[in-house]
Length: 93
Image (tube, rainbow, N blue to C red; front, side, top):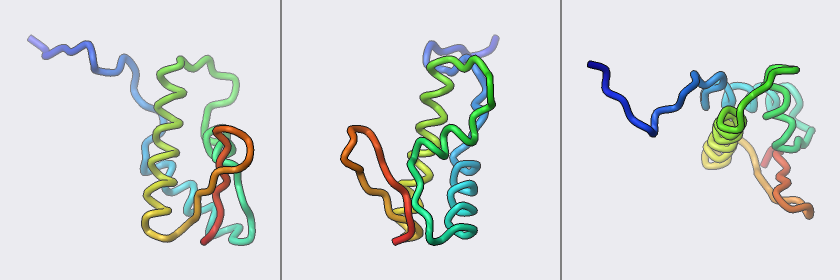
């Protein structure tokens, strides 16, 4: 009998933290002089025109945020809050 839990996601995540990490590392490497909005990463890796559930969107946000925080901890990028609420800029340190 399979073990079931109400806490298991009912979908396969489309984006892993490793995917998001690699995406941000490429952005920083390819465009070191640029600054990005954290939303850009989430939007660019999301399938266009898909009807994602709220849970899937939150999982993608979590993957991107985890990746950015890890890269900031390593000193590879800088995350700073902009003047608008819940808006963050990502750039090189």
